[in-house]
Amino acid sequence: MELQERTESIVSLTPAAAEKIRALMETETDVSVLRVAIEGGGCSGFQYGLGFDRGAQEGDHEFEIEGVRVVVDPFSAPYLKGATVDYLETIQESGFKIDNPQAVSSCGCGHSFQVAEGEAPEDTGAHGCGSGCSH
Image 1 (cartoon, one colour):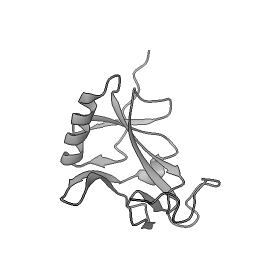
Image 2 (tube, rainbow, N blue to C red):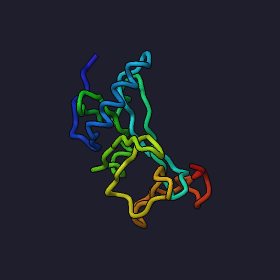
Image 3 (cartoon, helix red, strand yellow):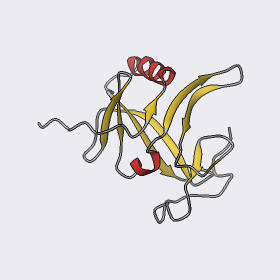
């Protein structure tokens, strides 16, 4: 089995996000990486996906930040380049927030975004506002 070459970081994690992710990973079994991805269908065109996985898949970009192994699939990488994952805890809400310089607009819920015209791949399944922004 050949070791996968580490690549440059596509996204970054704030210390608060890394701490929360490490704590959550300790409660899970059989997971070793954080997968950051985008999917079609958010109220602004794309939505973010954060989740744990057993490891990198073929073609994934893999890197380590703040003690967390992170993987990004090749489709998502161009849309996430330079993004920062943060974890916020306030009186009103707590959760992960992604600051993405590739996004030209985002939904009020902050879970979906839109890229510049011509940047989105064809047939993403993206929907207009109201398709899941019930925060």
